[in-house]
Each structure stands twice: as structure tokens, then as C-alpha cells.
Length: 161
Image 1 (cartoon, rainbow, N blue to C red):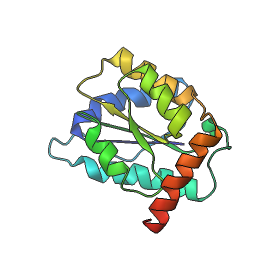
Image 2 (image 1 turned 120 degrees about the horizontal axis):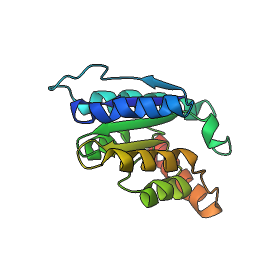
Image 3 (image 1 turned 60 degrees about the vertical axis):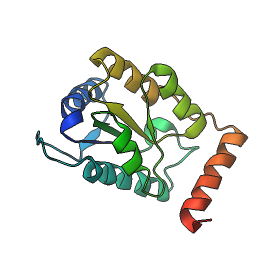
Image 4 (image 1 turned 180 degrees about the horizontal axis):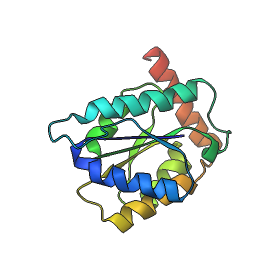
């Protein structure tokens, strides 16, 4: 399942993403905002998406489970930066911002990013679509050094040390 979230700044992009995911036969759930609301607050949607994705991770849907069978999240706001900051407050969320195909691929290969944040203001539609497609199709490398680093983050999240 792909969980989607956006505020007013990413609302139009999220609506396009829903069409792309449907065309690619990928299941999705929109966690809001489900209507355009100019005064909504991005953290509310980032937290919802990150909590769903992190819950799935805690239930064992993690690497080496194939990426296509894991729950994932996609967030959109004006810059995408706020969504990344908010989502990463949730233990188990690994949200990354991507502005191009190379960064989308890197965050999957090296960081096993389980949530992608996209800018509603600074990406053209064709760019967002290419970034999203790359992110969805890139498996985590599973290299020992990357696993070790993710384990360090996880240990710190759960113990604060």
C-alpha cells in the first residue's frame, strides 16, 4: 500500500500521483488532505503517513521483503522540506526529499527511504512522474554498510542513545 499525504501546496501534485499510481496498478490510500484547504497544516498529513508506514515496518514489512510488497508513503507540499522534517519525527520513518531521478534512486539504494517527499512548487509534472517511478522501482541495495547505518539510526530512535 502507498499512503499519500499533502497540504494545500502539494494537493494538485498528489491528485496527479493518484492517477499515475492507478494507471500503474499500484494500490494507494489518501490520508489527506482530501480537499483543497488553503489554511491546512502539513505536519498533520506527514504524521499520518509516517505513522502508517512505520507501523508496517514494526510489523516486519522491512528489507529483505521486496520493496513492491512493503508499505510506502508519498508526501507533497510546496517545498517538500517541511514534510520531511515532520515525517522523520516518527520512529521508523525514513523520509527523503528528491528533486531528480538520481536523488530518488540514491535514497532508495543507500537509505532504504520508505517515504518520498516531492515539491508541489518546484517540480514539473514530467519530473515528478519520473522521480516517483524511479523511487518505486529501486530496491534497497542491502549492502552491509547501509544496513549497519540504518541499524544505528533505529537503535538511536528506540533508545535515544
